Structures are given as C-alpha cells and as structure tokens.
Length: 468
Image 1 (cartoon, rainbow, N blue to C red):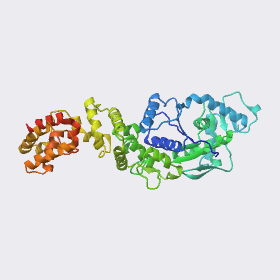
Image 2 (image 1 turned 90 degrees about the horizontal axis):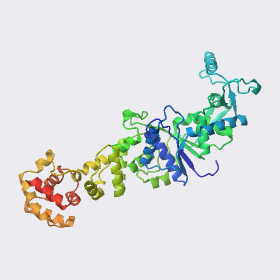
Image 3 (image 1 turned 180 degrees about the vertical axis):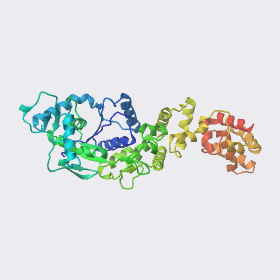
Image 4 (image 1 turned 90 degrees about the vertical axis):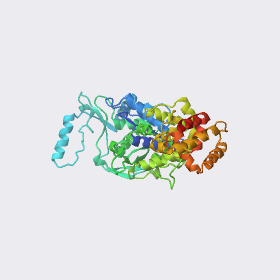
C-alpha cells in the first residue's frame, strides 16, 4: 500500500434505524481518519429499492449527527451510481477478467443438484460460458461473471483478524452485472470504494466473507486493494448477539434515554478497543490514540452500568452551555416538555453543581426538580414529616431575616447558622425542613445552591408557604 492520505467510509443500508453497532463502526472510521488528517466519507447503500426508505436515511443521518460524527463532502447514494458500476463490469469484459454467462436459473439449479447428488457438500457453479467462443453466444440476455481463480488461495491480510486464507476452489465466478443490467452489491461496493479513494475499509466482521470476493474484483481491475479491518460485532451482557431483548439497539434510542453524546462516544470507542489503561477521554484524545492494532478479535459485550459510569464522567466534564444545549435536545427527542424561559435561566445557574452527580439527563432533571416546580410546593411523605410544627416555626422566624440579606452563600451561611443555634439545633436539623420547603423532598442539592438558583423572592415565598 502506497502512502496515500487516509480515507475511510461508513456505508449503511437505509432499511431501518442506525444500529448501535453501526454507530460504533462509523465512530471507528471517523476516529481513524480524523486522527491522521484524513477524510471520513458517508455512502448510503440504497440499491435495494424495495427496502430502502428516505425515512431510514434521515434516521441514520440524525443518529450520526447526535453522536457528533461529521463527514466530508456530500452523502453518496450508491443507487445513483449504477451506470458507473455497469461501466466497470463491461470494462472487465474488455480486460478478459469477466465473461458473458447465458446460463438460466434452471440450468444453474440443475447443475448444483447434480453435483450434490454426487456427494458434493457445496456445489460451486462452473459456467460452461467461461471460456466459450464468442461466436457461439446466443441472442439472449446474459449476466456478466467475474473469472475467479480456481486453484490456489486468496489471502486477506486483515488488521484485526490477522491473515485469513480462503481456498479459491470455494469461490464461484460471482455475478457482477445481472441479466437485467443491474449491478450486484459486491461490484458496487468495490467500484464506490475505489472511486471515492477509500484506503481503509473498517467494518463489521460479518463482511469478512465478502472481502475475498471483493479483493478479486480489485485485482481484476488492476486497482490498489484497501487495508482491511473487520471488527467483531457487539453482543449483549449475556454474550449473545445484541438484540431488542437486551434493551435499546438504535442510536437514537440512547439519545432519548438521556445519555450524553460525548459519554456515548467514549464508551463505544472503548467497546472492543483499548489503549493501555485509558478509560475516560475526550474525542480529541481518542483521535490521537486510536489505532487498528488496539481492536480485539473477540465480540465486545454491552455493559449498561459501565456506559452510565462513563457518561457520568462526561456530564461532570462538560461545558455548561453545551450541556444545556444537549439537555434541550434530549427533552425534544424523548418527547418531554421543553423548559420555560424561567426554568432555562435557573438551569443555567444550576448546571455547574447538578452535572457533578448525574450520569444521564433524566437523572439531571430529577436533581433539578427544585427549580422546575411551581408554588405551592407539594411535599412528599418524608418532606411532610420534616415540616412539623416546630420546624415550621423555625422557618417562620428565618424568613424575615432573608428578605434584606445579600444573596450570596457567604452572607446566607451565618444567618442560617445563627437561626439553628438560637433554636438549639445543628445546621443539619435545620437543613431538613429547608429542603422540604424549597424542593418538596428531603434529598436535594445543597440548601445554599438551591437558594441561590431560585433567588430571594422565590425562596422567601416558598418558606412562607411551608411555615403556614
């Protein structure tokens, strides 16, 4: 392989949502290209016209965008390039690396049945037209088949799986152009990757079986073969192939569940790849570290607890403005009510401490309930117990002292401590009814944090309500 600029690609079929495994494949391609100053391209393999839908394409683009994966240039449609694919098939005829095959489906089926009757476990069809004299060609529809080597071995030098050796006798003369003039998937992929300048094909190991056939097409056209890297699939926690019974499988589902995108990127990067002891890192750091040699050969297991832990680190590391933007996007994706202007203003003030103890956006919203609720605050059972007659009396004596206080922690702290001392209790005993009055619950952020976020007027009003 000559020293060409790195070009990777992600090439999903638009037949449904973006699977989490596809998201990781796209991420690996993105990291590898971006870390080497290369290009990351996006191709939609929409040749299956019955199953491909614009809605699925839109869902794939949304999923990639949420993950934070940007691509270079326009999105390429494979179907739109069908004439180019057919052109290459005819070039193979001219080069003598492909031939016209007039065999019918019935003849092919009869050939295989006869071979199986002779005891062959798998009958590779050998077309009688492979070396036929063109003067014997009938005036009938034909497919174009590639001339696969019939002896020897094809070796795939895979950067993840190692050397994979396939006996050529097991490879058939694959059809590259059907008798109706439409190209096959195998041909389309190779032509697109060549024309797009793809240097590294990083994809799921379910495509490993295709690599030998695709490599032969490169050879048939005299094109440079890309670097192969086939990555293991993602399994569920039980070690079985990931499916709906394990939980969410679509990328957009994870957004709606409230996982921050940066945490998701970090977790998916570590899912089947390792670099020393690195566990928590930014995308910039991942780009510098990521290499194909760090990808394991065995399937990776999805671990939701580890995912949450990783996301918690990224919530705490996040810039407040960016986190607020993503929070609003989460609310929209989950179909939840948007923040009001007043709630958003309070959230801006609260994010600096709320983000330190939340792992997902639903957790963050739960911890932020004190700033989302409206008066009168309805206390839960434990909060009601904390607001007994003695506690209400203490809150009533505190309220006038807050009305003219400077609204900073330094100013508020001595006032609250003095009220606690006057009533012969420690601050902890005062904090419980304060939490109950301000948030309607006894487990909340710091009393001072809540007071500073909701402001003097709202704090005093809530305390008055609670002390009645």
